[in-house]
Structure formats: structure tokens, C-alpha cells
Length: 230
View 1 (cartoon, rainbow, N blue to C red):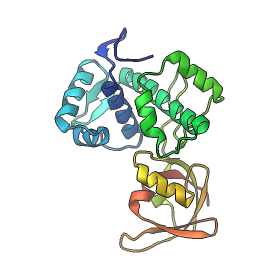
View 2: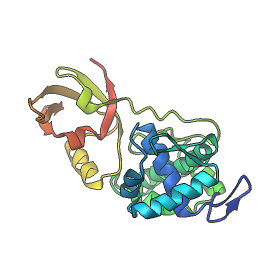
View 3: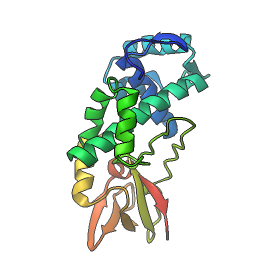
């Protein structure tokens, strides 16, 4: 387990703040989103100066590097630790959803609190108990104990052309209210959506789920990822 202690491989206490930062950098990079100080501060719900101090510590420890645009990027060492945190987080989400019935809009916060304390032994038991799941409730891939991770997010729903069908594979999990609304509409991984049209001048995207049509604005379509199938 990585807890609030110093690992043999890097002289940095892996506190919950360190782990949260590594995970958020990993996820944002996988979504091709900017990993700037302000973006991280918003995602982590802390101040920009706090993030700046953390980034300096992670860079000094060899877990991050700063690009020419002053954006943060994981080193190979940092990515290995980030994948470990992501694995714990997503396995816990799967366990909470499947075994305890925690709604998909609540599992992220609960897993965030638990991921820093769960031991490797318990995590492996959870993994085996769940049958080695490949994805969490939001469709995010769960890293195996070793090796890399394909964080491909596929096509975003707003990019699907009118008249096409769209298979939902992943839904970004950072907005609980949006997740609840999407669940009410029946939009979740494994669902096929018919894209029927888009209003001009930045208007909503019209989709059909079963026999019911809905108008979705960009804040929602930007959360839904998958592939165009027709």
C-alpha cells in the first residue's frame, strides 16, 4: 500500500494530497486537458499557491516535469505511482457500486476518501471478489497490478454526426449533478444513443434513447465518450 509514508523509491511522503494530485494529473493528461496550476486547483478544490507548492515538491522528487508551457506532465516514475492510485480508486468505485449499491454519482467521493487507506492485500481481495473487473461504474478502465493503461477516451458525444448511432463507453465522473441527470435520462456505459440532430449557432444536440428524444447542451455532451457506430 502507498500510505502517508516515504516509499523506498522516492524520498517523498505519499500523503493523500500527493496521491490526489498524481491521479488528477494522470486523468487530465489522458483526456488531453491542460494540466495547469489553475486547472489543478479547480479540480482539487485547493488554492493555486497550494498547487504550486505541491508541483514543486513532485518535480523535485522526480514524479513530474514542467513543459515549456509551464504545464505539468508525469515522468515514467510518476506515472507508475499515479496508475497505482487510479487502480485503487477505480476498484473501490466498482466495489462500492456493485456490492453496496452506492449510486454512480456518489462513488467518486467515497473512493477518494478510502483509496489512501486501503492495503494492497485488501485491494487484491476486492479485485478477486469482483472477478477482476475491467472497468469501474463510469466505464473507466481499471489498471492491472503491472503494466500500462490505455486511457483512450474515444469520441466525445458532441462530435457524433447527426443521423449516427453512438455507443457510450465512458462518462466523466467529476460532476455529481450531471451524473444524476444523465442517469435519469438513461445515459451510461453500454447504452446506444441515436443522434438525431443539432440546433444551429451553438444549440443543443438532440439524441434519442429508446423512443424518447432529449436535448443535451455542451456541458453534458462533453462528459459522454464512446464511439460512432453508424
